[in-house]
Length: 212
Image (cartoon, rainbow, N blue to C red; front, side, top):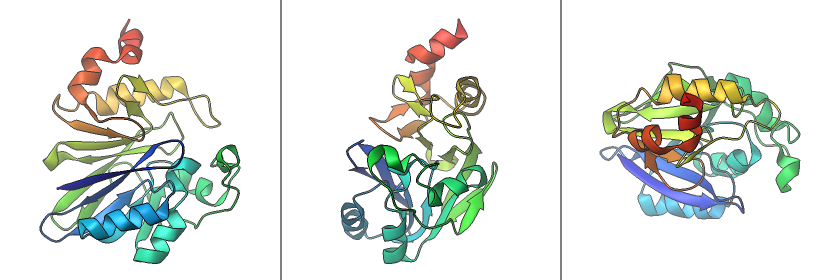
């Protein structure tokens, strides 16, 4: 499995380029901005981008959707509950970071349990609401990789104080959907360094606090 990270925007959003080693078919996860840098990384990786996937609809994760879609012809996907955020800067909090223009609508919507194929690579969609109503994580189970969006970070968890956020729902999503995964599953968060499920289960202070 190919995984490349491009850190974009002043908020240091992790945009991930992923793909199949054999076919070079790939996807862009969370193109938050800096489209030229993302496109250069796509070319350097030799990927044919088939999908653009937003883990949620906040502006710092969707800002380059239009430019990447126009350059690659890829289909744009997001969970159905966050789909309205893609075209509404008020809902996406675009006004908060100076992104006032609407982006393109999704070409399709995702739901819990969906499976996405990129060559030999398979991604399972996990609905993990709490940061936003339609937040998702993407699990490449055969590769031991999880793309967690803004749900789980190294030593922290996602914010739940934005409109649509729900702290208890966020904790349930992490405890019920993510922590049951194997210790060695590598977690690629929406911001900051990668971690593992085992490390967060043992050391994440937010989760230890909830466990009492």
